[in-house]
Image (cartoon, rainbow, N blue to C red; front, top):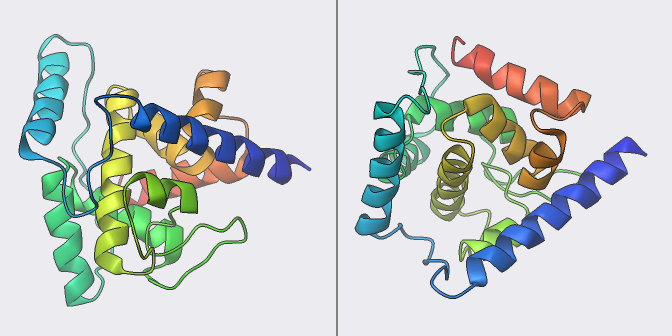
Length: 192
């Protein structure tokens, strides 16, 4: 029962994000890469908040295994474009799909970063099983969640797993065993 509620809440959250993205001035860019000025503006916002002491970003110090040369190239490219540490992206991919670009979850999430169809559509993904499109969208989504939660990695990861609305409603990591284990596993992979 809890997992069914969790799935429904995740779908509602994804639809809310889709509606927010479709409002004027927020239309999603194609999957290839975010516009430079948007990325720079986002990075500036994070740097400014960090300078003001509003957030503290923890450096990623652990290590995660590597994937195929092509997947590694996409991880490096889109992590850089979205201001993320490549090790974080690797850890999310490891936890989400084990590096299998054809992975499909019981909830319907697809590909390396396990994008729900609604999330994939939000970011203009045409093929969730294409590693480049999947990583491009997944990193944009993760970067957006980090901005939303002011650099708080555990909250951003919880939102990636359970949905942004769920994290907001609980005011932190929701009391779902799956989500708590998800966050802990990724933080452990990163040595945190």
